[in-house]
Length: 297
Image 1 (cartoon, rainbow, N blue to C red):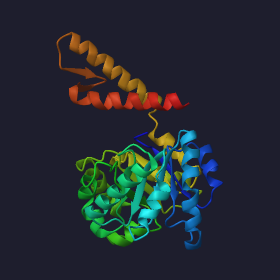
Image 2 (tube, helix red, strand yellow; image 1 turned 120 degrees about the horizontal axis):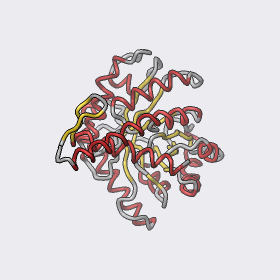
Image 3 (cartoon, helix red, strand yellow; image 1 turned 90 degrees about the vertical axis):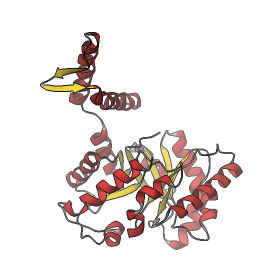
Image 4 (cartoon, rainbow, N blue to C red; image 1 turned 30 degrees about the vertical axis):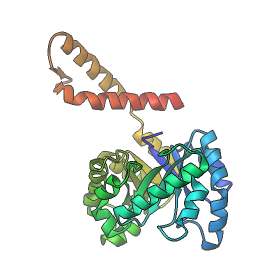
């Protein structure tokens, strides 16, 4: 399932929207019972979770659930979410490693009650607080369940990250570069190898602006993105899919290096540049990703 290149937010109380989400082929759907669900509909959203997760699992789509920030009712939300096919819990407004530890314990209990293998459900911390952003590495190290930090890249409309950090989001986005890069580094340094970036703050129909943000997220080091609109899923999938030129380049690189090894060399000139063993992991990763996309075609 991991890395998940595209994740689409779906309000969990809109039961019929799950089928619509599946049709645009995201890597995962984020079933939301937090900000996109009015308070009076949250019980209904929780009631729908297990059937929605089953529908996603049958379609080969990952299932995240974004719960509310930790409170007295979190245990009930986790119990409503944990079932076969649940990929991860997204925990918003997280500030401290203790919150991750508490959530991990809840998941262990809920997995046991539901007959789900221990440790099957991951955690994706969403640190929309200044303290959470500052200690993101510690959030990731708090539990082996943590798969990746959930950061954000915004267009000119600011959200929770901007308010907590204090920056004013712009179209250029240079004010966000430090935070976005820090989230990626902290995630990987904490052992959570699949950081996600939320792509927000652009007009829904401005696909060019959405693509620019997704490309920036990819180039900074995020392994996938979470988007708000179904039309953005195809953009994300296309950005993260290796191009034919990249596939040809890395196939040629591996072939050139194989020939060099047979000649007793540990480095070789390839298309005008010297390459050695340090370049091989990336070549293999890109080709594996291309094969993964091909298998889904």
